[in-house]
Amino acid sequence: MALAKFTTDGILDAAAEEVRNHGSAVRIASIAARVGAPTGSIYHRFGSREELLVHLWLRSVRRFHEVYLAAGRSEDPEKALLGMAESVVTFTRDHPQDAASMALFRQKRLVENTPDSCREAVAHINDEIHERLSELAQLRYGRVTEKRRQLVRIAAADGPYGFVRPYLWDTVPEWLPAVVVASSTAVLALGD
Amino acid sequence: MALAKFTTDGILDAAAEEVRNHGSAVRIASIAARVGAPTGSIYHRFGSREELLVHLWLRSVRRFHEVYLAAGRSEDPEKALLGMAESVVTFTRDHPQDAASMALFRQKRLVENTPDSCREAVAHINDEIHERLSELAQLRYGRVTEKRRQLVRIAAADGPYGFVRPYLWDTVPEWLPAVVVASSTAVLALGD
DNA sequence: AAACATCTAGAATCTATGCTCTAGATTATT
DNA sequence: AATAATCTAGAGCATAGATTCTAGATGTTT
Image (cartoon, each protein chain N blue to C red):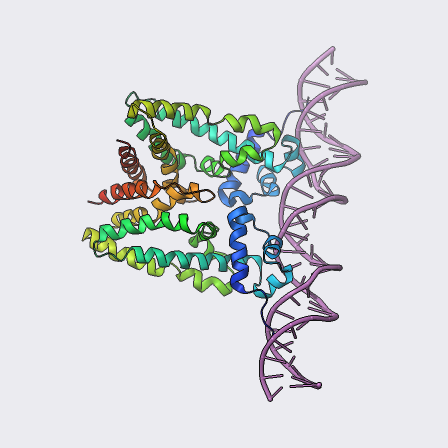
């Protein structure tokens, strides 16, 4: 068997860099140029452009989830949720390529139009997160209602993401984590 | 002179509807189909696809600014800022097509790569808003620092936009305005 | 070293869409 | 009614970029 000159991860790294610069308008030719490969070699690893991008997205989301779940392990549910909120910002600051890659798709839409080979992975990628957020909602509020469930999601995920989004293609200001924590604290309090 | 069968606004309406459904992947052919025109008629009005989209963006932004500035006319600066924050959500709820169209571009990037015919309009479209926000920062805090200026922008604009963004392609929940007001109140308090 | 599997190469093809072009229709003006 | 200006029509062109194809290189196994 021949030795792989261009690895899957190497190609994804190049793709991430291109996504950081050109967003969803990445071109296969640019990715190929960046790794020093002809386009054919890209297609040897990935069935299509779409498949490549979905794999990139999956890899970045997994990397993020690791950090995100770690931040949510505190005993105190409020602290855990605020830690998760804050980690959204710090991850974006520390891993701008992954953050940009994650912005390529939103899971809900992706499940519907993804290459078959990725569908399962995409469908379940958020399961563990949802589970942990449910637990924390339970711990934080005692009785969980639909509104409280959504407040938790907004405080720990959607809100923080909204705050960093403007900085995805730029530098994250150092005071942003404090803003996110203040905001999420206020949002969680709406459930009391 | 011939009577225009397809008006500029009519074409933009169709484009907005298409943007709401397909985002920035709008195709000229779809817009044409929606107004019942051949593509040639579209190009009779707009020099290029880009120009059409920029005009659409400008129209939506202007519509939004009307509502946004009206919400910010209160004497009490805190009330004015929170009113503006809230109006971001209510406008999105009430005018989903315009909201989706506004998401096509971000001004900063657009100024750099816009057709010449639109550059001036794009460059100055936010001037009035920035002026009002400066005034309100002054009234709210007394002494204005860089951080306070940014807190105001985040509380009245970026933050609220982040909260509604997930609902741009969906329905805005009725409790979202309350979330935004709570969050923005907390953000503004960081400047005290 | 022969046979095999895998990977690289990059030119050639395919496709989707933006855009152009010219003929003719429509309405205002005189 | 004649003229002129503007607009519609939609087939066809142009281009960017994704994808395919096949020859050959490279390393692996026996």
